[in-house]
Image (cartoon, rainbow, N blue to C red; front, side, top):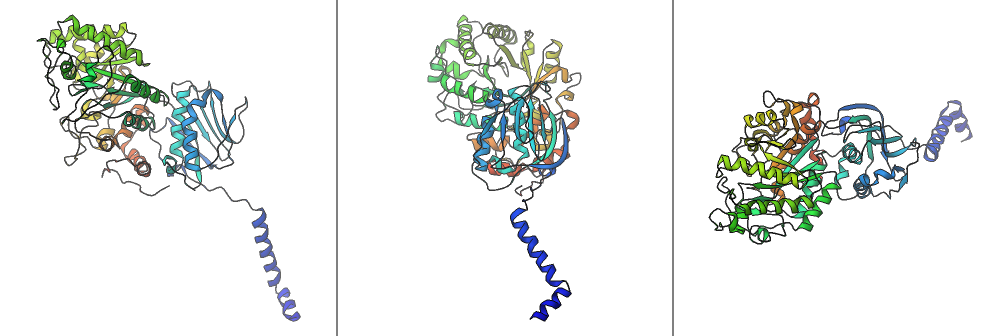
Length: 529
């Protein structure tokens, strides 16, 4: 045995084994676990940022990560921190941020170096993440980018025992258009406060900043007006196809407004008139020229109803409605409708829209109208929502007014994807995922450019929608494209790169239990990151 040991030493075998065992023991006690790595290509950013530069390394959020958040932006970070706690299970404690930026950790602060409205700057290295913005809204928008840079499990409502990795990157970003919106029609079919809040969650995730609520139409009046109680007593009692309808109390509406404001989204309420008013006409006979109440309507025809233009009571009614709504609405704008008033004589329509613009102004608000409003003389601040006729868009610009672009053939989310789509309509054509994305508001109409455009909106009309599953099916994935059209620079948008980024959102849609349309135009990435 002694001879064997001697021979092993002589051949270097015994020493090599000792060295190997020693190395293993040293590693067990002293070798730190290397940080896992993730590349930027593994993530999907929608809308695409103005400037994006990949850096070396990966930032990992662990139970020991220190968070430094400036007191003035705490409000904008509450939702993000809550989401992070839920997904990671970490007991995250937020430290007050001193004047000097820490060299390690997760840092969120205001900075005068970011001057674009809603803009932000994000720098991620292996040691530190720093998010800066010039406003709380910019911080909130930047945190949506951070959420997309994290693993998809961040959107789940449960803890996931994974590595929480963010690829190193430098981003500078800000929106192309001031106004980026979606619309939800709650009149044709009523949707609850919880449903509207979920809709707000969806559009906030992709940096939209306005929600247009279509509150009144022939089929239902959905907002409580205390001075005219039968608007909801009778006017809210039904919907398309029958059913009980429903309405928002003023407290409900204030709740929606505040929920949206917490996500830096402004509510734009619409009272459609002088057409699309059967719900009001059924509630108050004096608003009809013949003094007789109409029957509640549950169909889907348009253009058959009109307020009586010649009656003083009509303008008392409008003054009361706009007055109560203005008092509940912090935003600048109230939408006064004006579309498809086929039963209103043109001369009456012009008189009416000019008068209602002024009533709106008298209550401290600015008016938005569908593009037919250009038949009237517009107040300087009135916005024109271009949905139908190119000549109306041109007429608005000729009067010196700005446009919200919602061209039906491009932006109406209630249009079917294809002929087999079980929901939606097709009067404006079919809108595939590519059709909904691959257009530019600033080149849609000859003679109209970006300087004439206030923003972009994607309306979702509710004739065929009876549940949030239905809403999600027509909304997703097209809403992401509309969000990018409103936010991202036109030169950075390209269908081929977009559909690759969109494909990676599949995981998040599944984790959020979104009933989305799985378009064959996109090769969906179904693997969890």
